[in-house]
Image (cartoon, rainbow, N blue to C red; front, top):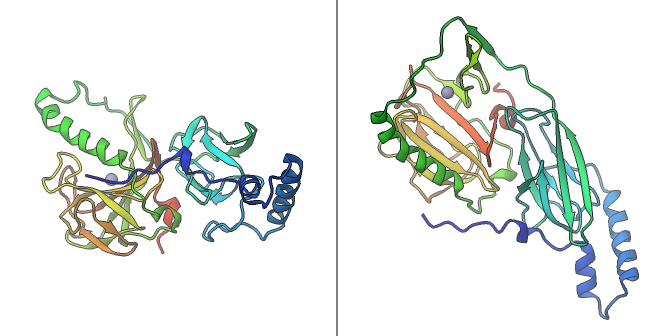
Length: 312
Ligand SMILES: [Zn+2]
């Protein structure tokens, strides 16, 4: 695969300050430039409330963002003027050429996250975000967790599958899907929720990484929830995921669709929101036909329902 990679830190564009200094007819004193930059910031501050769907016009003086400030949730917004790099709890956050950024909170995120912009002059702007906890569906069962682990025979098949998944997730396409409001890939009964977990005699099993949607049969078509680039389309079914389809929405945000009976797109292909991309099924390890849709932002597992809103 040959995808263009986003330049991360380098993509953060010049602030009003830098542009003013560079474009002025004569070299400005730093005091004059600072005064003009301040006037510019002043204007921005009096803009209407920030709407994450509108393309940003001016760079704000503080972080501006909207989203779902909860475990498995996300934020989307604009970094302050003059931002060089953005971090969330110390991890680099990709910033687009226009200063827009996207970040998300893992299922097990703590109750606070620090969003920090480092500016060209070395100063920092910090925004502490309170992350509300979720009430996960936890089932305690009086059964021992299956012990012994996977067999060597299974791992011989599994290792290359995992390598393909890791490689697909590492692709940074230039998709702008992360800017969109996501839609449901298919409508049906929600047969499994993100984050649900079983505890086996006190020992936690792995939680459910996505949302399961069942229509009662195999073959129901599903569509792309947002624009993206196909980064994995498993022609041979994977041992657990079956025919696995993965789409990169840009900025480190991606979707995976498991257990497909058919995949209608191929690797490297660009897809647009609402485009038919496959049919639901029960390939791989599945007890019945359903679409398992999971989403990740970098290493964080996030809840698709916080991107779409509840199914009506
Ligand atoms: Zn599932």
